[in-house]
Amino acid sequence: MLSPEFLITCLVVVASPGTGVLYTVAAGLSRGPRASTIAAFGSTLGIVPHMAAAILGLAALLHASAVAFETFKYLGVAYLLYMAWQTLGERGPLSVEKDNSAPSALQTTITGILINILNPKLSIFFLAFLPQFVSADDPHPLLRMIELSAVFMLMTFVVFAIYGLFAAWLRDHVITRPRVLTWMRRSFAAAFVALGAKLAFAQR
Image 1 (cartoon, rainbow, N blue to C red):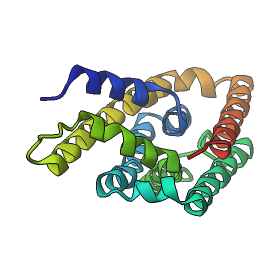
Image 2: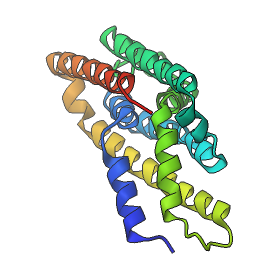
Image 3: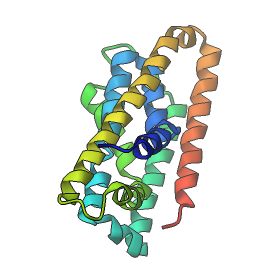
Image 4: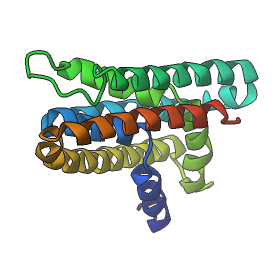
């Protein structure tokens, strides 16, 4: 049985604005509910490698190796800065385009995956997070961690999708006001830069 503490902690972590939420909201604002749902799915898939690393103990390598951690971290920082540049250049996640020129479902999914996968802090977070909710006398600790991971991912998808669908609902009010869209594009670009800076200064 899942503990209330686990569920509450998951909800707080998932609902806290981060790169996945930002990307999903941007997709909803620019391309509507379908794109936001696909972005939420991609961002959720980006969690899988971190979950696997925590379950297999590979996250300990990132925690122990400064070179591995810094390499992975700066790849993530570079990608976030790239997202900010694209957003300002009207080619990124907050670009409003016609259906025939909009990114495909596969492109949207891959971007969502990359946004979350290039963050080494997630692996270390799960390495410290999941074992807390596995009893020492549990006969099947691996299965238990997989179960907890599945619940976390489901909650991630649902919460991200809600964010994205709400953004999609606001879409008509945004795209009909060029000045508002310009302000939002700059705000999203600044947010990507801020998240990149936060990751750049992250410690193991």
